[in-house]
Image (cartoon, rainbow, N blue to C red; front, side, top):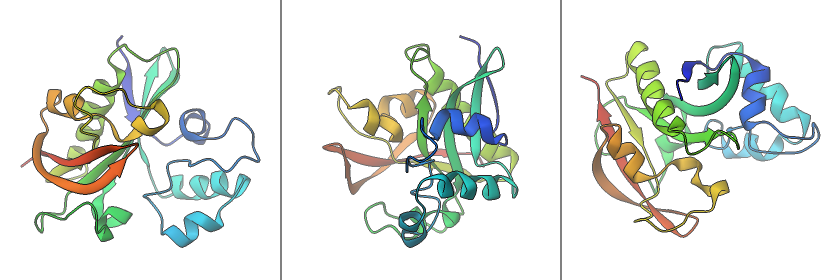
Length: 189
């Protein structure tokens, strides 16, 4: 599949990938790591989408993959300092480099198994590079080939990041869906 990766700036396209099927549902909208926990818990139903719309007015929230103009994939990427990873006790900060974090990859059903997660990872790295990031970190599952519940695979899988040129840096104490997460980095300097 030859998907085009672009900055995520169109609310309707972001909604297609991370928004609810029903307007009143309180789905993630990929806000959990982007905003303070208290604010995240207070936002319910349509207020979540409205919050994302306000954030989009400040700039892209990551990248989207498009296939023939249709949004089919999402990757959240931002400076780590602007995310809850900056304060995480479970995912360590390994140095003072102002890295960017890549924490969520989502591919729409019907488009999976076509290499889109690899395309999204490369697109997110390029997005961060264009904005001056010295490196991009990811915190994927180290599932060692075990099956992963798709709803919890948003963090990505270690082999996909290795294939994209990320290197293992350290273990974390974070566990997602029963699998440990590792800290991986792609150096851009």
